[in-house]
Image: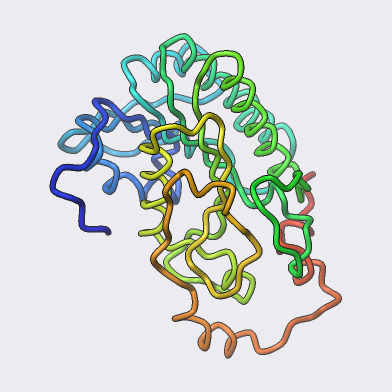
Length: 273
């Protein structure tokens, strides 16, 4: 965890959705330093509230519950929803209906900044020998990536029509360490995840901006130059794990679509269950 500055820029009440998920669990202790009250939400039990925390159990498909969840909130770190390739009905409920409910609640409650956990799978069908930017058109690699592309378009709509600013984070692989050679390019350390979310929350002017979430890896398919105004500067790198990963995966099957496309195994997962 990062050492916080003595007087960080703070929100009165910050909402973290998906607090029981993998990224939510990483961010929960880290975001407390940036707000007076951290409101935590998930459809699952996330335990008792700690100091400076509030707990709200709500399903994103519950419009009334989501509206109550946004009441009194200054900004949102939206990590909730379905985070892997799943059958369409689950994606539709969590990532389409849920996202609309969240943005409508933000509009009605006067919330003006959302950090949206999008995904690199919005562009998963670009090849691994291409370098793309946040301005590159989507090529989703499944229903999950498609739903995140919808979320980015939703954020664009709510910015243009109602002035709600969003930073859409096309998150790579945010794990303790990279598991394979693909992740040498996509890895996002937990400390850099915190840096990315905080930069997205606190940048003075963002409109609707898109930025890829990756650490300062030697191998990279994503050029974040169009999003430099966010102020995100990664400080970690997958290169410290490179020798170990390459020894564990010494060869690559170049006929395997997972080795050709940036989305990795997601390009092969059936979305039909």
